[in-house]
Length: 295
Image (cartoon, rainbow, N blue to C red; front, side, top):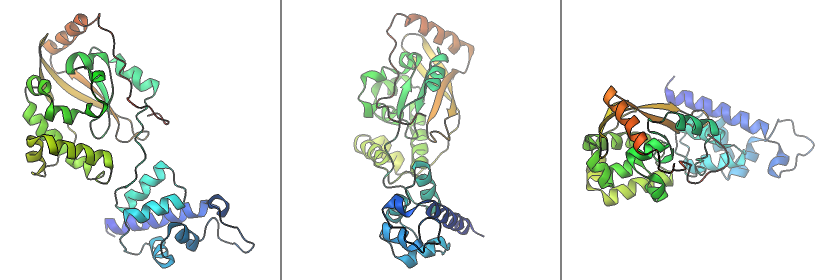
C-alpha cells in the first residue's frame, strides 16, 4: 500500500468514528423513531456539510478522490471537531487548514519559570514562524528590548533581515539569514494557507531584497544546533549554541530555546553582562496576547 492509500484508510476510519459519536440533537436534527445508526447518518453529514452524499460516502470508503480544504473545513464544523481533531483531519486529507484558530500564546507558569531560571543564559519561547512569544532578562541584555518593539516585529527572521543592530552584531548574519529562510520555507509547506504565515512572507518580500533572492532559491533546511557568533558592544564576542525544548503535544510548534555558551569565555562574559545589567528593570517577557489554553 502507498502512503496515500494508508492516509485514505485512516481518514475513512476517522470520519466514521467522529460521525458515530455526534448525536442528531447536537446538530439540531430530529432523532426519529427508526434510527439504528449510532450518531449521524452519512446523508446527514453530507447535508450539514453541503456536499454530495455519494461523494461523502466515497470518503468513508477510502476511495482515491481529492478532497479540498474547503470541504474538510465544512466536515470538521459539521462533526463538531475540536482543535486537535481538526488538525488531524487536515493532516490525513493532505490539505492546509484555511481557517486555523487564533494561535494561543499563553504560557504556563512552569514554562515561564524554566525560561527565567536558565539566566544568565538568554532564553525565549518561539512559535514555528520564529515569533518571540516570551523571553527572559538575559535575552534582552543580548538581543535587544523586545518589549519596546511593535508586536508583529518581534520575529527573529524579520529582525535578521531588516534590523541594523542584528546586521552589525551577528558576525555570521548572512549565513544565518540564508539558513533561517530555508527553515521558514520548509515549515511553511504545512502552513501555506494560514494568513499569519503569508503575511510574514509577504512583508519580508516587500522590504528585503536579500530575502527575495533567498526565497527564489527554494532552499529548505531542518532544525539543527550550530554556534552563533555575536559581538556584544559591552562584553565582546559571545559564541552561543541554541538548545530547544519542544512543547508538543500541548503546543506542537512552540519551543523553549536557550542559548548556551559554546566556550568558557562566553560563560564568563554572560555572567559579566548580567552583573552590568543587574540594576535595570526586568522586562515582563510575557506573551503579547494571552489566550485561553496554556502551552
